[in-house]
Amino acid sequence: MEKDTVPGVLHVTGPDGLPFTRLEVVMGAFGHFVGFREDFSSVLHIHPVGTPLVSPESAGGPDLPFYFRSNHPGLVRFFAQVKIEGKDFFPRFVLKVLPLQQMPKN
Image 1 (cartoon, rainbow, N blue to C red):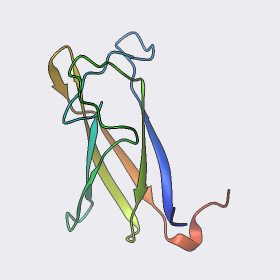
Image 2: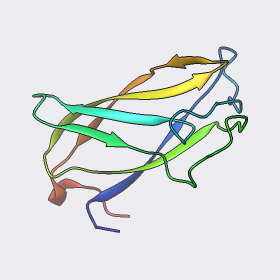
Image 3: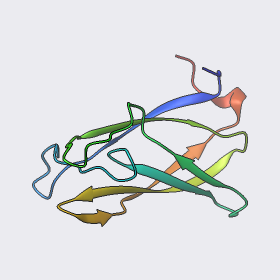
Image 4: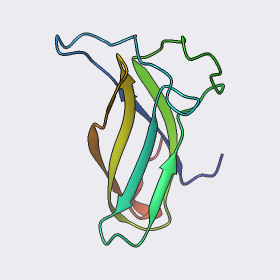
């Protein structure tokens, strides 16, 4: 993995705040992400980590792990796509990308 690639996890909860474990398959995964740089100069499409799903009856969650890499500092606005009870939902979140020299050391 490149040194400027960072892991992330989208944790899905239900209306009761409890971890949601009945995510349905959408395009071969339990979710997808699309991100836009704040100046709309780039579009990112990210798949969660894991084996592609072939059975539409599969259920999963609550965590959708992913990896993210950007060569451009700034804000990236993401929309996730998850399917619950046959309906698509699009939760939003924002990631702040720091210049590589400012990234925290592990």
